[in-house]
Image (cartoon, rainbow over the protein chains, first blue to last red):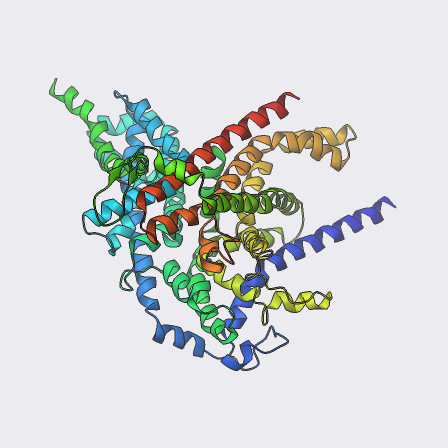
Length: 282
Length: 290
């Protein structure tokens, strides 16, 4: 009896596992399937999960009609540059906060952390005024700079640097290494797991950022992927309610999603680490 | 002497690049926003100081009240679901089951898709005439629902989208919390003859409390700041049924170019978040004492 019960429980658990997987994956699959359907087929009823006549025409339509590659380039470029800057300046600051006794250390660090409480949306209007004032709206620079004032990177790296044994630093000092050299040759290499986490968080948050790029850029030349998708395939673009338009929309969605999913599958471990570090300890 | 001076400058020098960015792009704007909110500032022309007029106007602005009510409705639809489902899925994939890591990956995957793409995908799923959801619902005898264009269904549709998109994030946080609980504690309870249910209720759940507090806080904050999905899927419509506070800020500041008024909205959001966090703390303290 007890044994039978156990099998029943196992079966139910497996069914739930499958249900979760289907619920999570079906929309992604549906996007993929729809992207390969020709214009006539996408509106066919009942809907089919396998395209009868798979086609690439939606993809070529998107690439020919919109500056899709330009958006992708803008998104990638701004995310990569922002990530590099963040890692450099955040790790330098975190090293200072973690390992030096100086006047104002605690106060400055508390000020930095206090910004975790202030929603980022509060900064949008002043940032807009500031970038308008220096004529930097509609530039990649505008997409990059606000990211560099982030708090989580300093927070994660400071916590890590505090755990580095002092002996390591002392030994390097005795060998005559400068603090800058210690930062570059000792601190950065041993912090690699934490730095990977910070890099992924920064990259993803810049890559998916929407409100600021929407506000700061309105020329197609500097537009990012999330904004391009929203403006040309969102509810206001005339896509909704006309099924044939959903073919190109899904093709664009798939092209925008695939790189993120590949990166995620490759670096899953660091994703999880990054999330648990900012979530739990924050 | 010289060496000492150099040493004492080092930490400051290391801080300079970051502090510059922090003050210019995070701290400064956060403070400046408040001063902007005290002005009448249309993009062309000079700002005019008007004290707290924007704030008093806000609370008698029916559209703003609507956006606030809508946002609270959105929170009511998403927060409990995200917490409960996040925890349940975490418990499920923490069991000793084959394929659990695959499920973890699949459930988390939507989170790495950008918000606007998520919006577009679900617009297609929710499509009234050709959408796959209405097709499957028709098997249950449900007539086609105009998900995104009806006042009653637009917000639930956005909520479903959001739950799908972010439940994996909460799952990961809960899972990390679960894995921090020492196996010996559960084992000891089992030896004492506790049932699985008792172990969960008396061992796992209390030890998961710190995680739950953090997840709840993050979920509340994120739901309050909802913007992207709504912008893409409904644009706040139909007839303001999905207008949220951040979206109202966006409209005021960047469609009507009322920068002062928009800033006031942003600061009210900030104030609400602080109240939210304080209330949550107070409530949890009470629950803890009981």
